[in-house]
Length: 221
Image 1: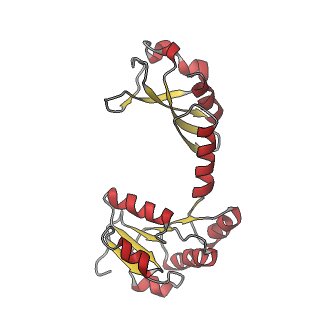
Image 2: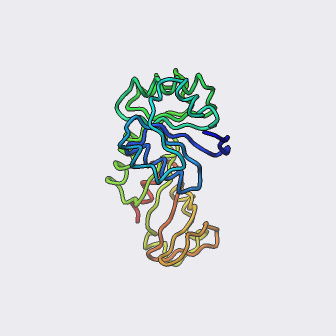
């Protein structure tokens, strides 16, 4: 690249389903994105959607250097099923001194290799989505995200028994151990919850707490 990219620019390597979604979201958030893929067809399909798109073999650090990848502070390695290419790409980024490397892993063994090779963050998209769907299928939660082991954020409806009360009167933290982060009412913007917030039938609550407590509260709705 002819110029130094801004600090928040990101290089995304591998523009398949996962990498493409990451690159697209970054672009929509206003970040410059350098997308790299070994497939000419895939590169062509992204040509009008990202700041820069290049066809290249990313397993060689010199190739990445010629593309100016060393100027990026953040890189996402989203290569799909080619484990060798994934690992060698992380190694090449490490050799370039990339400060923040995110890498997609197909499983625990792959993840451990990526960590030892130099990845700062290892992502397990299939496993994470599987756990999320399992929680949604087996509960009354409308949405669910586990922030850390045993800690979660969920979205659920207001129990009919709590409608018309303030959060102070509901005492949900004392009774269920959960915290109401915010409330989304039909036709209105999301608002952060306060002790004086009055709950209404049909409201959606964004709650946080221990995973079991979050699910137990959702079961009461």
